[in-house]
Image 1: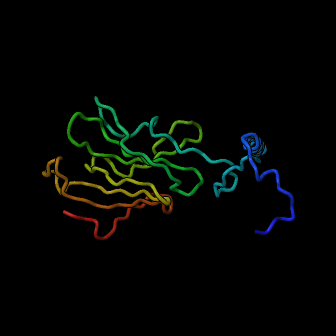
Image 2: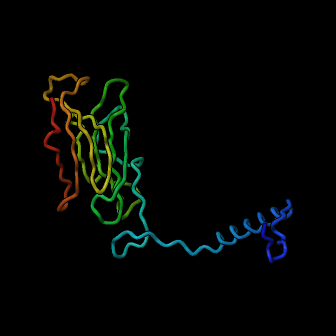
Length: 188
């Protein structure tokens, strides 16, 4: 066994007092470092002149163009994303009338914030409830709205049993929402 040329160090024989001092010093450093953090940077929106992130409008206060009287409109799903790439997120809401039974048709609406009001406003209807679609697999990703629409080939098909299924995608192009569908998405 080789002996060290350095005398025995104090920290090689620890005591509870040593660990308490170490824990106190570490806690003090953590507290000091969190107090000395730099000011948070404003998130970049990618749009000139925009200095802070804007929250997406809530679907809760929106007036949807759906007739449900005497019942009320219910927001079934909602998701947000910057669909028109202007640095401000829009909200897309799937809405139908509240019913005691059956599957009411859905409407899909795009909401934005009004420049003069905090209330959201509907700027586009992607699916009209009069078309009798039920919306499933709804999502907003990468500036696009995707969904699966369950529908009916004729007015004679009962509401319980949709016989059409179509995957759809909407994207903002040249000032309007353009709907596309994969070639193999239609089924009967």
